[in-house]
Length: 326
Ligand code: CUA
Image (tube, rainbow, N blue to C red; front, side, top):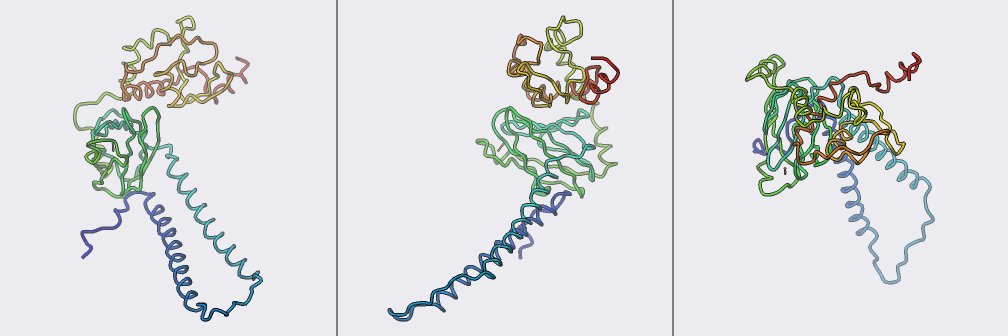
């Protein structure tokens, strides 16, 4: 009878069993206490009903045993919730290093996806089974939310920032993708699917179609077209910092503060360059807000990340100073 009325989506990712397990645990604790408290309420109401106006209950002066029981047992129950929940939260938010990277841009009302190898997709994502896939999400307009119930994965795509999510599919198939944040008229139609394929099949899919331009190549092109290259090069007399190796390294700002030049900082520096200037430079760079799409920004960042140049990152800095160079 309930065959066509599934209460639970399929479990199709490595994280799904853990999420469901925690949900069932929370559900069990909730049901146990709701039923227990309601039952006790009903029984006590009958058993201890005041039968005559001059009936007074005996005074009770506490019970150490009872107080210990109702302190210790709930403490254990909520500690399990906390540890289990935190562990899951961390594993959900830390993509493995060997993950396939996909950029996701939400836009009213579609999902635009690009693989690091260059393939573009709209409202569809092809991935191999058994490999972690890391998503970097942002939005071109309003907040959207990338939701794949079968993977127990949901992450907001927020304009102006990068959110990261990941999953590893455990069985081939086609799974629903939803937008889970009301984003306007066609929100309910902002849907798609994740196609999980056997690795060999995935390789064939990757090679099908015209050879795509990788985000790195597209980013390099933009870097020239937008004239970034004019100032960001070694012989520009210090107009702009050289960008080799800057992605992911520590940079010192004018304010004296040190930060990691992560994807969000790089994005900010492209769109609102004056926000956080690197020490030793003037705020002369114009904004590129409106001149480059969110996809373009992601491509430029991919290009910058591919530049493993002479500029010291945190690791190489130590080597350089050990060798006696500044
Ligand atoms: Cu996009 Cu709802």
